[in-house]
Image: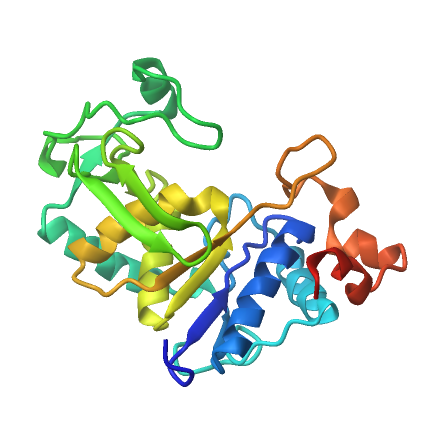
Length: 278
């Protein structure tokens, strides 16, 4: 990757306080941008109004700055690919959805989570949704009357989706086995993570996505979206997750390890980074 062309990103969502796990992954993203002489972009993933709170958005930026993060483009700085708040980019996501619809890559789905759970033929891994059984694959939008529906991407069953991760090495996931047809637009008229992420990373010309290893399977899904939209995907670098004392990955409910709480205890960013070799 050319030093001038490198573009990395931080993409937190204001659904809770940032914790040490976020900080560790974001720090790697910042270091890689610096190593490549590139730019770091901050994107506020505030698209899900049912989960985010406005105060978390302000606290997020404050906590990132306190920890030592610096970005060249973002909601507070502007930039050539503004707006950097996902809630202001809905028209862009709708355009991407229409491309997928015209290309017949997606179909309307009226199944509830309960329907899918009950129809699942095999247990799914933790944090992974059950493999969709294909109940609505043959449905057309004109057949759905007075019923909310989501748009679901049709995966090529049996195809191996392979990529080489910058940190975890070669990866392969089989469509229809490791993951199934996935939602790209929710029944409450909100774009799903997979679509919004691909649309924004492509539009903002991100060259490498640094994120947690729990999203490795999501990369396979997103590569299918890049292909369907005829877009060039970025590189990927998935970081190992920070675990708590029980061996579970950190979540926003771990308030004791949030940056805000640790800061209130008098901890310094340098102290918190000691175990990272930074």
